[in-house]
Length: 192
Image (cartoon, rainbow, N blue to C red; front, side, top):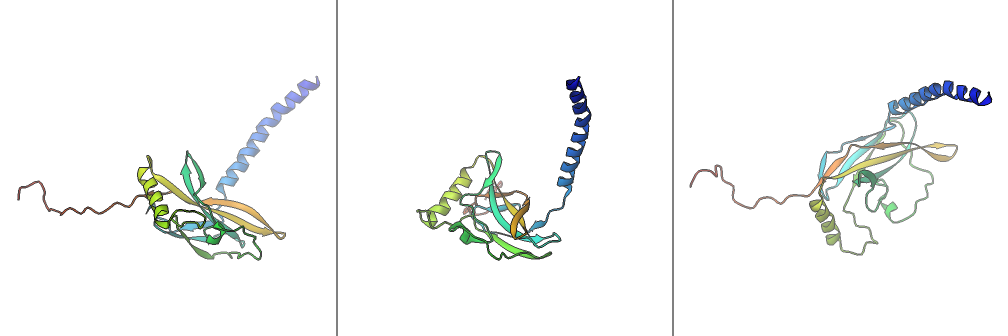
């Protein structure tokens, strides 16, 4: 008798639980991003600088960290040698954030991503580091995809709280092609 009552209760509660869960998922997906990533192109040469901006569109002051990501093995992961693009020195040291530079509503911050910035701890020369990246792009079987990820934080009771992660559209990294050195002809199908 008790088991039958519990089973009946579960059967009655399941549709209510599913309805509330799908409602909260729909609300999360319909929420507006707290920041906008602006100015990205769809394609960049292997080692070209990627310049873009991040704008605070929320009603609150926010703190942001910006990272580059690579699409590898059907998932997004940190780019090699990850660092906060707003603080390139974070590549070399552990950061302790005291008195963070909060972004007021509407503020835009410019960001530059240098994929071929060689960390000091990498032993190879700058030239071989850059050539290795270009060679990897040329040999890639599928397009080399990257994107920008922005982690958005608010200050709550003196502590940082991550409230959102915003991802840009993917962009391709393409090997820079060498210009054709052969002489151009207007109409190569007719004899000279």
